[in-house]
Image 1: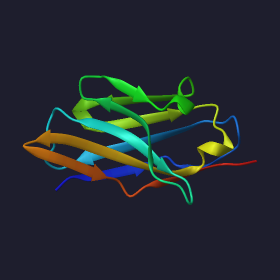
Image 2 (image 1 turned 180 degrees about the horizontal axis):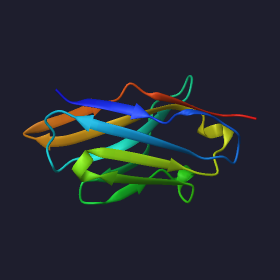
Image 3 (image 1 turned 120 degrees about the vertical axis):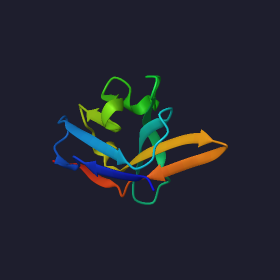
Length: 118
């Protein structure tokens, strides 16, 4: 069983910064992708950024230049540094881990609230 534990959400003013962390535990294939998704009220859950165990990174266009994703493979931990936050970044942020071995495995954290407001 894989468990994802997130931390680092909160309330911040526009232009501020937050850092999210997500630690994975359990039996995890070394070759995997970890990432962050977000879901605002009344909207679907969308990918924000992800990073493979080999270091390949993807960002949604709206966060490029403001957010930075990184990971520590030894700790099975992924981070999301969020700078220049905007009110439209307000959402519940979910950590995700996925890999394929014969079939697709897809795991989610419980979510952490990020609120950007003055």
